[in-house]
Each structure stands twice: as C-alpha cells, then as structure tokens.
Length: 475
Ligand SMILES: Cc1ncc(COP(=O)(O)O)c(C=O)c1O
Image (cartoon, rainbow, N blue to C red):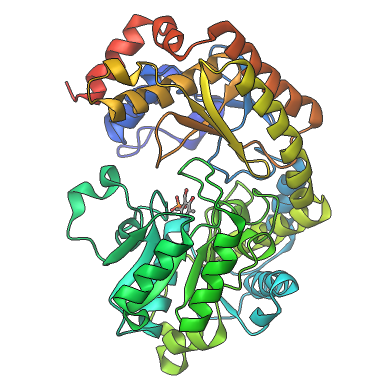
C-alpha cells in the first residue's frame, strides 16, 4: 500500500462498500450534497444493469431518467463502448494534440459545421471552438460576443434561464440562489420575461440597440422546467435582432442534438438563424465532458484571427479521446434515428403524462414536454395558505420529495435548478419502448398511491424529513 495514496484502483474495481463511499464523499468532497442525497435516500452508488436501468445498493431496480440530459444512449451503451475500445486499440493518435493537427478534432469540426449547415446554410463558413463543459462553452460564447461588440454594455438574457455557474455564465443565469454571493456580477444584464416579444422590442428600443452586446437564450428552457416559448417568439426575436445587427447566442446545451426532438431546435423549430451556438451534454455520449461553441466566421476570426489565435484556449479542449467519442455519438444519434425518435416517442409520452396529471390534480399541477424531455410540476406539499411566506422553501422541499417519491417508485429523475416543485424526466433517447411505457406506469402507480402532494410529506420517513430540514437550515 502506498504511503500517500490509501486507496488503489484495484480496490475500486473489486468494489468498495456503499457506506465507505458515502463516508469518503461526505468527508472529502461536497459533503452536504452527499448528505442531502443520503437523507433523501437516493445516494446510490448505483450499479448499471442495462444502459437504461440502475440497481441501488438496496437491490431495487430503477429506470434511469436522470443524467441532466447528458446521457443520450444510457450508461455503457455497447456500441459506444465497443468504439472506445477500438479507438484505444487501433487509433495511435496523440491524446492532447494542442500544437498539432488532430484527426478526430478535424472530423468533429467538419461534421458539426456540416450538420449545422444542413439546417442553417448561412453557417457554411462557421468555425468551432472546443472546451470541457457547457459553462465553458458559454464562456467562449460570451468572449466571442464581447470581442465582436466591445462597446456593448449589456447582455440580454431571460428570466429563469440557465447557462452555467462559472463567473460569466452565472451572471447570465438570473437566480439569486446561484448569484447571491457573487455581486457585482461579471456582466451587466437586462433580464427579460421569456416569451414576451413586445417586452424585448421595447427594452431594446429604450436602451438602444448599440448598447446591447448580445442576446443569449435557450430555445426551450431546461432548468426552468421545460419552458416552451410561443413559437413566434423565437422567429420574432431573430427578425428584430437581425434588423438591428445584434448578435444572438443560442444555448442548445440541453435542448440541442436530440433531447428536444431536433438537432438544433432554435433553427428547425424556432425559425432562427443564430450567430453563436453552444453545445455540450449529449455530444460527450454520456461518457466524457465536452463543450463546443460554433460561431460565424467573422465573429470567430475577430477574436481568434492571425496571431490572436491563442487569445482564447484551454489545455484539454479538443483532446482526441473526447473528440472521437463525440464523433461517434453524433454518428449513433444519426444512424439510429434518435433525434426523430425523440420527437415521436416524446409526443406519445407527453399524452400519457398529461393523462396522469389529469387524473391526479391534487398531486400534479402541470406537466410539460418537448421531445424526450419532461417536466412534472407538483402541487406544494404545504398549501400556500399555510406556508406563511415560505413558498420558496416549500417549493424546494416539494421538488426533493417529488424526486424521492419517483425514486421509491423505481424512476431515477432530475431536479430542476431554476424552478421549484418541478422534477424532470430525461430518459435516454434509445430507451426501449417497453421500459419507456414502464417508466410512466411507475409514475402513475406512485400518483395513484399518493393522490395528494401533502401525502408525500406524510409518507416521508420522519428521520429523512428531520435530516433534510436540518440541512436546509444549516443546523
Ligand atoms: C442550457 C444550459 N446551458 C449551460 C449549462 C451548463 O453546462 P455544464 O453543467 O456542463 O457546465 C447547462 C447545464 O445544465 C444548461 O442546461
């Protein structure tokens, strides 16, 4: 045993008890996050029993509808694993070709721009910059925009948007829980209601279009709980910004590459032709982190032209393993028709979810869906007439209890960062039909058992409730 490294890779391969993992995570990592999921009884660690199913340490099976929309093919999807093995065995490329050409990077750049051009021909000359996360893709977009419009004072963003938590991206994510400790923020913003074209036009008119650095938006808001704007909002916004020469950044990190049922929903569904597009999550095939920022040639060259090509860079962006996996992930999405499947299966699932919501109005206040991307909004576990101004806290508890309820029913779901009382289901785009139906059966069984949101509270083990309350109040 090493003097410095108490645990060895072989220990993990052989298996470390769940209790020990929990102890290590609580002690050495983001401990209170581990505590929260422990108290909520959904900490795992999970064993992957099929690409779409997880097994808890308690031996129960869960359908995986989590992963924050970053798991397009489920976990350990055999075609992707086979490809990674093939890459390791047969592709003797440099891992970090920073100062050299990279074959996998070149192919991904080419394929991404061609894919985009197939729906937005004006992007034929566009170029790609790679990074290592969604937030970093947004940071790159911010820099492209600022370099392009140095005299701009404000970014226009939208209420309940989510663009990440690095300093720049966070300042475009209007949520005091996230921004609160960090004022003054890195960027000045004009935060407008999402979907309100008149408010947008009026603000631009009052502030002066020259003062706007760029507009940034998600075509469908993910962390806000799958919020779908009126369709003509996107095309209208595109028309106004084009007329005034304001660049538009579309953040398709969650919505794009299939989750919404479109490769590029802002373009294909919304009728936009944005100037900068950010992608991440599914591009990594659920295996590796990756961010991509695609910008029009003139914007790209303005920041990175000539000797300024080094002005923005990162060590790991464009590394060969990630690029290869991303090339393969796009290929699987394409060859297995998963984008279209997300649209058609997504519509079928939404009908089912709406039926469940109609049957149990005391539990579910609303459902939304777009592609294989669903939001379930619960009624508050404590009605607002008796929550005495603590609606936010009740909202957070409701989300947590909703998550726990579905977990107990056999569905592993997502919280939503920018809204309360809402959990999201983001199953893999290739989830087998039978499991897809089963997922809704399980949601319905839970709804039938509970009927009312307050029952979620009553049925939660008192110890979990107490522990969660202590954590919420930092006691
Ligand atoms: C629309 C959008 N933009 C940006 C991000 C940030 O991505 P990451 O968590 O990889 O930094 C997310 C993450 O959920 C997102 O949904």
